[in-house]
Length: 195
Image (cartoon, rainbow, N blue to C red; front, side):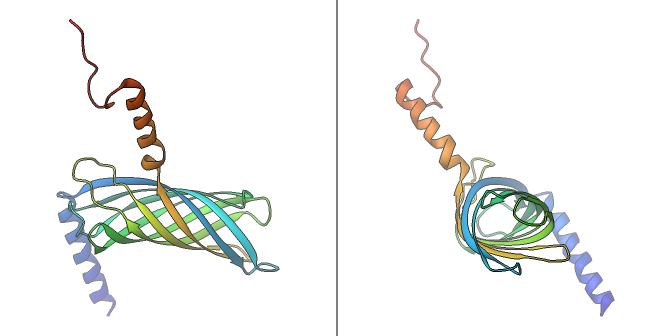
């Protein structure tokens, strides 16, 4: 049984590596706002979270392909913690332009309100995240559910849900609109040279 599993994993690795030559990377960064609760402490606690998440996903071009890549997250819960985590994200195409992503992360949380330490996290997201054929940046607007558990003697589990807003849509696009308003034209067009 163990040999068959190892052979299957090697076959999967071979297929993934052989397709990696045709794969391209699309990256994305989002601001997450969530609410939830923690379990396992002295009493259940309400949580408000802010996070920055980014991934670079590799795979064949298009919305119909599975993509895989590294993921990073910075987060604070109730403004009482600073948490950093890294891991991997798997994008599973459900509907064209609306995939499901699954992330597994390991990180460290420095907390004021309880014991600091390492944690593991799982994040499930769904929403608009279409493949961009013209740019390596992939815009996304998603809802998420996150679960994380401490890796120390008295573990606390946090369950949160919320929305993720694309950083380009929040900051870059409004800046380009303001620039084009004051310039009187698109910021992508070269300025006219008077002769």
